[in-house]
Image (cartoon, rainbow over all chains, first blue to last red; front, side):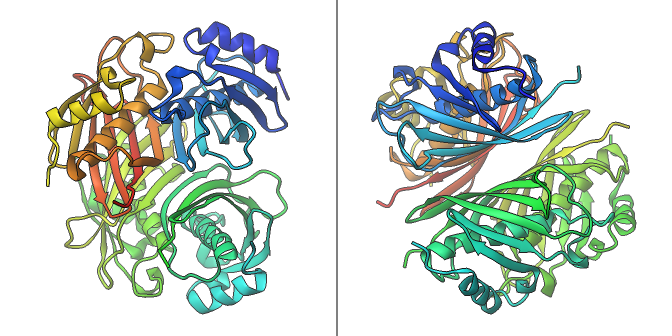
Amino acid sequence: MIKMDAAGLTAFLVETFPQVHSDFAVEGVTEQGVRLRLVTAERHLRPGGTVSGPAMFGLADVAMYLAILSRIGPQALAVTTNCSIDFMRKPVAGVDLICEAVIHKLGRVLAVGDCLIYSEGKAEPVARASLTYSIPPK
Amino acid sequence: MIKMDAAGLTAFLVETFPQVHSDFAVEGVTEQGVRLRLVTAERHLRPGGTVSGPAMFGLADVAMYLAILSRIGPQALAVTTNCSIDFMRKPVAGVDLICEAVIHKLGRVLAVGDCLIYSEGKAEPVARASLTYSIPPK
Amino acid sequence: MIKMDAAGLTAFLVETFPQVHSDFAVEGVTEQGVRLRLVTAERHLRPGGTVSGPAMFGLADVAMYLAILSRIGPQALAVTTNCSIDFMRKPVAGVDLICEAVIHKLGRVLAVGDCLIYSEGKAEPVARASLTYSIPPK
Amino acid sequence: MIKMDAAGLTAFLVETFPQVHSDFAVEGVTEQGVRLRLVTAERHLRPGGTVSGPAMFGLADVAMYLAILSRIGPQALAVTTNCSIDFMRKPVAGVDLICEAVIHKLGRVLAVGDCLIYSEGKAEPVARASLTYSIPPK
């Protein structure tokens, strides 16, 4: 069922999202989704040095997108229709974030999954998110 | 860290929610939360014989409540502040639902967790939900 | 654009949801949606006499469903795919709830809207909800 | 009840969020919240020239933050705990976005509100979002 591996997803990201691809590193395609790293940089930070909400949202959004593509192959047109995100703890300053995206449903029209985001090396998540993507007809 | 087991949660449910306790059976306290069964009855069904949305919402809500109580002890006053629920598949007719509730954060003021709901015996979830509870000061 | 008025929606509700239609009264079709009343009864209450979370969820769900039908005509097959609900205040005991549903998008595949729920006669909402419905192809 | 006007909010934004303040323009403090403009720039765009999801999320997040501050005064420590956002239409390319934030509850501990985001000059919203903020004890 896996149609794109970490190398394929990375190549797709570089080509399709030239503005943001350097923010991310695909750590791996997992049994139910993907693991994606936010390579934290100055532009992702809020005062105090922690990663901003929009940067965490973007991480979850790209992770779920890649999780879906890893199963359906390269389709640049899938679009996010909903995201519900809970910010639970302050990220550790100066540390990358790791996002575990898991697909719960991959339907003909909609895909649904969950993300957990961690400061690298920590056991407790800083945020959780659920996302729905609309998949265009072929 | 576990302050109430399945028997304690069941006794609490019977005493505190006389209207609804017979809808539910506590299957167990798990490493990160609880497993709760909806004993499906006529009043939970929609035309076609599948469990209704409000019944699934109620299952997720009670499961997360019990998961929190299993860690903090009996406090009838915790209240749901948010629930985001995705309905992904039609439940199987005539079958109980099983809800796996997992706590991601148990803070001083807020608790946050995720639920996955399955038709008993099926591997793919029919719904997912995230919930936030407000915990009153002691 | 309005294809069903309050009388038409009521008739549809009676026929399609015999289990629950008596819970609700269609107050009117509004400029952007519908106004729906929950005729509060014993079965909707939690200890203390306030309306339960599942009953409020059900009110928002049915209100958005009817708002969509009022624009697209009777189609029993539209299904809720997501609901995010915030419980903000305790409902007043012994009082009906009024739900104002507003449609923001009525697409070919998905419909999205917001609900505000009030204890009758109060200016501040007890809950807010956003809902997405999937509309089946004709 | 209004403790900060558009000029006060702008000054606060400049001082507190030096990284992002130039993205936004406070259009006004409204009866129930604020109106905030995203001054669209290259860094907010996705391929095709439309505003990205994270940029829209950031707009809703800052708008609700300023809406809360306009009522409670300058408190840099309020934090977003939840956001549920629906992306409904593609934003118009090359046009600013306007966000209308409305507060539904301003409690001692939590504040809850809704945002609607429009491409400037259009009547139909491109996105809707609901947000919860946690307000720290004084």
